Each structure stands twice: as C-alpha cells, then as structure tokens.
Length: 205
Image (tube, rainbow, N blue to C red; front, side, top):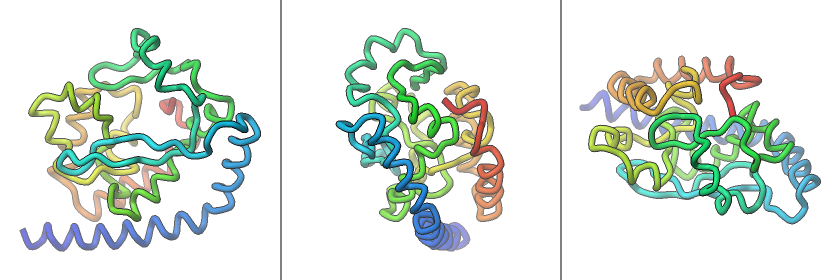
C-alpha cells in the first residue's frame, strides 16, 4: 500500500512536469494547427470539448483539436451502422465527418495533444486507460467498469498495442493488465513506445 502511494505521488509529479514541458515545447505546433483548422473552417472552433468518464466514473471535459465538421455529433446516429470496431466504441476509417486537416492530425495523433491540459488539471494522466464516453460506459458490464478504478491517460497499453485494430474486449483486457502491473518503469516503457508509433500509425483513424 505504501509503495502504491509513493508510485501515485511520483506519477502525478511526472504528469505535471511532462505536461508543462510538452505544452511549452509544442506551443508553436499548437498555433500552426489552430491556424490551419481556422483556414479550412473559419466558423468552427479550434478546440473540441467532449464529456468523458474518468476516475471512479467521474465525468470531465476532455480537450482535442477539432478534426470533424461542426455538426459531427448530430450526424453520428446515421453512421452508427457503419461502426468498424466491436463493443462499446464507434470507429469508422472513412468517416465523412472528418475534415482534411482533421485527417492529418488524427493520423499523426496531433489532435490528442490538448489533452496535456487535462493532465495539468488532474482529470487525466500521461499514461492510463482511454477515457470512455458516457454512452459507452452505459453499456459496460461490471467487469468492464474495472477500467475506471484508475485515472485515464493520454496514452496507454491499448494505444501502443494496435489501437483501432484491437477490439473492445481486448482493450479491456489490456487495460486491466496495465492496472494490475502498473509501475513507473511500465509507464516509461509505454511513453517511449508511444513516441515510436505516434506519427503515421496505420492504426490511427
């Protein structure tokens, strides 16, 4: 128990330092992406805020660069039948709601970078399970809900193990394995692997 408490304290310090350095170092990239998003769609917002479920089922607003058209949520219902992954998630490789700039920043995972703000706020960690949508959690079994006993992360074992080519049940198993085995060394390994697969991943859509 004492070791776990020390781990959580050090993990939080790493989150704060890592997120702060990331925001500073990537500030010019943030500005460039914001300009490109505005040029393609001047009326839309640069950032996209979406309700997600975090630690112990607490909801929070997760930030991303907007990669879809402004009415993306309204158009979702008509696209659900084209879902390409199993379980309580929706993914569609040729999603017509994605903009041209959005396709690039999704492919490179640049759209995820504003989540560093969530890390600073404490809603998320650098490493942890993917934070699910409330509608996904609504269909979770008691077993699936075990994913929610830790702070969700910007990257995790699922993200570096195939992402969208991995089904929902496999994602849950990967997350529970991480929760059981989590340590500073494991977190560092996942962060390093994330860097190697971040740009141009064939599984990112």
